[in-house]
Length: 138
Image (tube, rainbow, N blue to C red; front, side):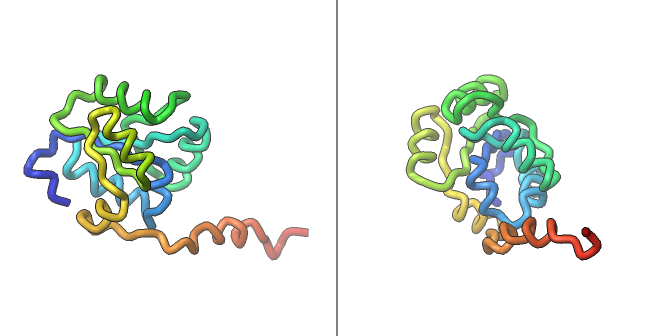
C-alpha cells in the first residue's frame, strides 16, 4: 500500500473490518512494514477483540479496551503521535466516527485493494462448527 512516502502512521481497524479480511495476521504483518502502530478498535467487549486477535495470531499495538470506538480513536491519537491516523472501517457510521475524531477514513475494501490484502469469502465462519465435531468423541 502506498502510504504517501511516510511510515509515520497509526492504523486502526474496526473489528468488523478486520473480520472481512482472509488473513488478519498477514494484514497486520504487512501493515507493520509501512506504519508505526497498528491495532483494533470496537464497540464489542474487550474479550471479544482479544479472542479474535489471539485466534488469528494478531499482535496489536493498541485496542479499545472498555471504551467505545470514538473515545478509543481520540485516546489513540493522543497516545500515538504520528503524522497520520488512518481508520479502516466498513460503513458510513465508521466514516462519521473518523471524521468526528480527525482520523482519515479508508473503507476496508479500498484498503485491501491498495495493499493487496485478500478479502474473506465467508467460508471461514463455517469452519469452527466443523472443527468442533470429532470422530473419536463418544
